[in-house]
Image (cartoon, rainbow, N blue to C red; front, side, top):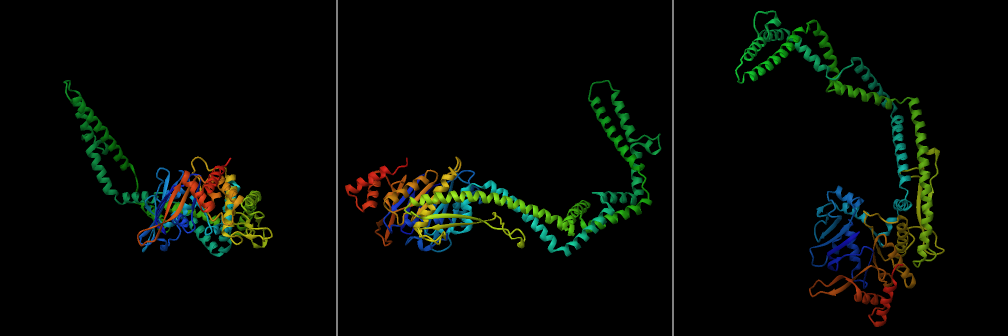
Amino acid sequence: MLEELEIRDLGPIRSAVLTPAAGMTAITGETGAGKSMLLNAIRLISGDTADVGRVSAGADAAWAQGVFAVGSMDQAAVIAAEAGAEPEDGELFLSRSVPVSGRSRATLNGRSVPRSVLGKIAEELVTIHGQADQLRIASGTRQREFLDAVAGDQAELDAYHGAWEALMAMDERLERLTSQQASMRQQADYLRESIERIDRVDPHPGEDEELKARRSRIENAAEIAQGVGGALAALDASAVGEPDAPGAVELVTRAAQHLRSIRVDGPFADLADRLESIGTDLSDVVFGLSRQIDMDEGVDDLDAINGRIHELDELTRRWGPTLADVIAWRDKAVLDVEDLDASPEKVAELEDERRRLFESALQAADRLSEVRRRAASELSARVGEELSSLAMAGAGLEIRVTPRDMDRNRGGTWPLDANGRDDIAFLFTPFPGSPQLPMGKSASGGELSRLMLALELVAAERRMGYGPDSPAMTFIFDEVDAGVGGKSAVELGRRLARLARGAQVIVVTHLAQVASWADAQFVVSKGERSSDDGVATTVHEVRGADREREIARMLSGSESETSLDHARELLAESRLD
């Protein structure tokens, strides 16, 4: 929801702050006063192309900022967070400056961002219905998205998307198998030969390092034996066949015994404990060294070890750098061979699976089509009713949902695409006897604005609100009252007010019968400047007696007592039940 719009030096508006109501806001003023600049400001902060021609005369740059309330889970908040600009106290500040020379600058909560980011966020927050904005609904994609939103078919869409993605994955796999069979067979042969070679060697992780350690031991056996023997003789002579010569273990044990024999208070017991601990550690060392002497690895083992190391080195050179990498490559190759096996049996098996996936996707598409058709029928009827009340009696909208037929000669997937099997068309009949024509090609700006109002009204009724943590969407209508007057104008205002019950509505209007329904009204008016900059435009909110005078001006162009009485009566009557 738009909480505040601030403008500086944009066209004739030198400075203006607009704080629209949460419900319906009317923007009024004399023709040519500059009401369009407010819409231009909205478009500017929505990422539209900057036009330096709109910078006020004598100013260095134009600037606009919109402050929007957003919920923590809103898509707009998510996009902002991804751009590095988290909402502040539930608000997003979208700003744009357009200098006379140089590039425009877009900012989001004070952080510079590409203007495309503002566009993505604004798309979630604001919908503008003006003569320049209506063609967006003319595209088939937008019409499908609108219908899906009204239909509430997210469950059916999700089910179809899952089936479609599975079908596409299978098509890709089949294409890979059938279009590259020769090269894939060569690859499969290479993988099988490689797997066989690795399996023949049967490596184990870390085996090469263990073997190299054993080889080093054998090659240095004499040096190892001399060193271990000397160490054992010093620690425990009995371990090397000299029981009469005392070793370190025995000497430490004797020292501890001598300390234990002292019966006088002192640190002797603690010192004896330490010596016994040292003795235990020395005994463990003696045990470990004795095992080294017991290992009997002779020169005869060296040839076998070198041969095994050579085999393992061959594997690591080709598929390494480590044996663990070799084993991982082998395991993956086993799985790859299954996909690369382009035998007729394998292809036939996948084609059977593909037919099953296609039928599943087709069934999901049919369920989606049924929901869309029901929603299209209801939406078309309700829009027709609304158009009759908006001075467009006899006008109608047909939303046509046409499932594409399957052509077996085109591979079977032809009727389906990423969004189902439906061709969706919004066909508008602006007056009785007129042929049905696609939206965007069959109506004036005012007619199209009223058609969009009717669509939004019906969509809002179906959505039944926006949830406690999701501030309302902002709808902006321009030229919606073109060609409308009298009772039809009152009905137009009533419907805008009805839409404002579940959304924020801002309408630029010249009809008092429309403006009278607004919760807030802002007047755009001209004022003379004393400088050479010409005429400046001011924007101010009118309330109470000031609003009565503005409504009277819109009714009759004067502020006579009769027109004021009429204005008061109109304001009093413009209330929803």
